[in-house]
Image (cartoon, rainbow, N blue to C red):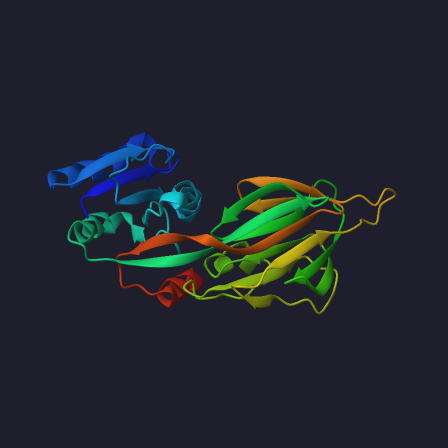
Length: 274
């Protein structure tokens, strides 16, 4: 691998200090390097994207480059991450491995969410971590009806619902009580947010299942609910009573470069020890 794009989080790489050092290092060893802050203008010859920041920066970058299927290497400028596995002290060793083709690439499943109102598509997006349907505005619980492959499964009175990939199982889903899943697994985890029941548990579904969530009535005079469907914590689509969102496996994947021999379990152990 000789041709690189470097995307930095300007809040983490203040003044472009690390990105400039990386560019100088790669070019001094026969590589080419293109620096970008938004990831939308990466040249055609780039073979991968080096993402400077943290897991959040990797998530945002993944959606920008997914159509080109460029592999990503996350370089964490903070603490050890699940997606950004290379730390500041390991940057040059990681670059040497890229230059000499000593790496592997993992394919990570993504989700696609499509929002319908009166049968008409009004919004859609993809997510590497999760699709979250969360109440909007006032502190009122919402009724969510859940279907799997058009068959009714259950209803929740809750603040929201998280549909997570295995990659996203260590994010919001975990905070809501969901299970930790090894990132190479292809499945969907459904977890209710603050459900008004004592027996609510996460449900794990195979990747080929399509989950439909319909927005029900609120316990208010007009009965109208309003929620936001968000994709990896970024783009959102506002939904209301009667709308539905179909969530299924995307045909696109995120390609993650693995440099170190640190396993997911080792990263998890370090996180749990913090």
